[in-house]
Image (cartoon, helix red, strand yellow):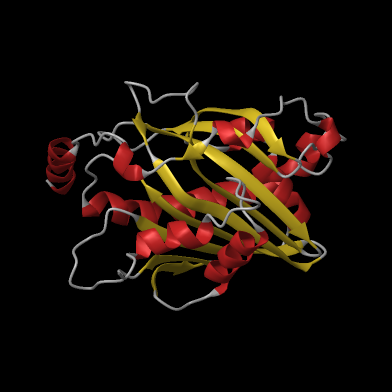
Length: 280
């Protein structure tokens, strides 16, 4: 039986290490390949050194799939790859630059290059705000930096009534140095926001919100060295695992979070009303 694109993605990108939930080297290589390929992607935005693509449906006879994949690429000529990598990792700094964040915290370590965290964010009205619990893992090789995450179930952080629990099938960053103070920065995400989001919401996210967030990340990169110099400059547990104060967690406490196991929240009527209001 032929796997759907979503199922195939889950299978290929959650390649496990030693029967663990932790991603293997093959998972990092597969993510890198997706970041660099142009096949099966439709360009939605191309301006000022930034491009945004949306993955083409595997089955063109099928209307808008529930799980959308988006890829954003930005050429940065004034911030090093190492600095952009630090920006993505530094949770304290994210509170200053991420305009969509409601709450974010690290839960526990799983390995020197893996942890579990919680993140909730603001959504455009009238959509309910979202949250996720994810396993994050990272790899640094020469001039390349990769961070990937995917949703996990953790019994101590159940879904909240005032938020919709979204699912990250796979989300991450590929950062490659192109010079001492320049890099290529790629963000790729396949996520199920749950709920009943209509097509116009997805289009808005890919064409408007994604470039805006990428610009925020770039600005954050430019400001990070000065900020870090005044805020524990030598403290970077993502580079020096011995600095981490997080408790260790047994990976067997976690399991993959499947989208179909979460309740759907019907937001269609609210979205249709907002669309009518916006077009009037």
